[in-house]
Image (cartoon, rainbow, N blue to C red; front, side, top):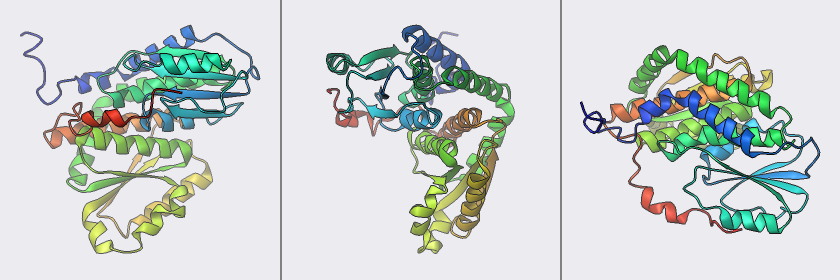
Length: 327
């Protein structure tokens, strides 16, 4: 059988194959970042700016993974923060499709140290999020911004390998969840910054892969705004929204309690509630594990709806509205 004949007409970009090789993609991204980034001690720079071509997918993951930074770390999309100067380091992570030469030139002209990490392109921009985030953290570790950068990358890769080793069982569980969610809209909740980033990744995966609406939230932050939005119209939300709760052992007791309280509150206004638990023992591993669950859920939901998870005809022509590639 020829290679052309073997292409799945509902997965022309090979999303399923890319998901089966997630650990390899993370290893390659981390290794590229380590190779491209000179080592500096902690305190060598005043602050760090991480610039990526994507507005949401990678930035929320980087913000969580770099939350233990020794210096301020700011993420930006295709633009250089105005504060960047001679005492700062700029880490650019991209797959090669974005020409960042103008931004890099501007940062260099301001006297900033610039690290340009070009990772391997993924099957879709969404699937570049985790490798981009890991490459960014690996580079931040090398420049002294995130002292445990190397340890974070090791734990993330190990979590990906563990998840892939249990892929058959996980896929069966997620396939059942796809059927239970059906044509309702999933509202995904996670605990704390790591769980919240995973929930946001789930939302993106459902939007991009299944071409379906989805919501996301972080407990306890949802108590400031999102939860108030369910004070009315329960007769409607109970028909169209299904709650998916992401649990992980890395959440603090307060975060875990807040997540349980949110699930109990939302139970009254959604069609049903479903709980997923990460097997990872630490927040980094849990973030990767839960994010990969979201990607697989998105792929399976796309298959259930007979749509291609790697094609986004609605948003493709709108990419011209991306943030400026200038400084």
